[in-house]
Image (cartoon, rainbow, N blue to C red; front, side, top):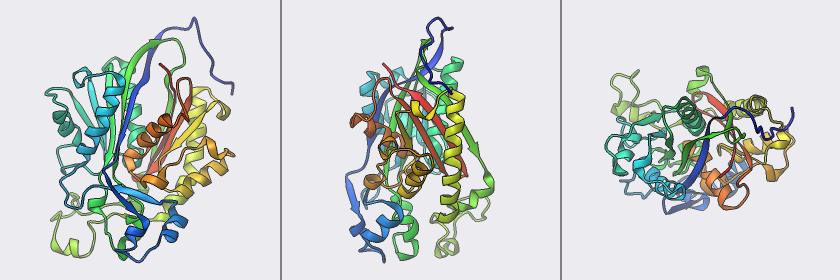
Length: 348
């Protein structure tokens, strides 16, 4: 497949371009050694299995929701884009840890931005929330339904984890945080902005990574018995998720590059969902990619689910790993089971 090049003279079309990014994590730093005070684990045990060294959690006293983290990331992204909240046509909020069971975080954050009528859409795609959100925003922009969209991924995991030896396999993985991206319509005949996407799902694996208590299939949805059984905590079949990730991620990257008319050599940086450093390393090895071409920051943040890709994207920009003209591939797999990839070319 040939590299995608300038197409001067081609028909003008709507493109979805990235105008600003932002990230925010709460100030409470939790190291692996901190976790060893509460459960039978160690820094070495966690690093060997996940690559994680630390993560950030909201204050122990609570009172901080995903919309609060999303708001802080959004303020940064809006400032960098040069936008006021009133410029937004749509807010898309991705999270599996909403402030309330309902309504969604998008409406709550919309109010915190000082808006009164701007539509807000919540999506529950977990680890692929940013990918599904970016593809949804691209569809809105290309169809002419919106010109300026704020896409947010934010999570507060820490308040829902079993922070004990019984829950350590899951508890050591997750962090709290938020990332935000400002997306705008641009009429151009140049290959810029979102160039292609590929999304997939397979509900057969829904029980491989889930939280059960509070669901409508239970009656009552919450009871002392359910709590005593620990069914309000997330459960994960780590081996199954790992196996599926290392199979599906290379496939979907090849698929999305084919859609965009690109080869792998044309990509400057791949930014995977930060689920497990070992998954990302296995992916890079299977694709024969040099270490510097795959961005990882799970060591510092843990798995922040819907926030992980936009946090990593913002950090990669800050570190000058990418910039105007760079071609980036976002990819991920997570609960649902869902997986996907989006390729974008950055530009002014």
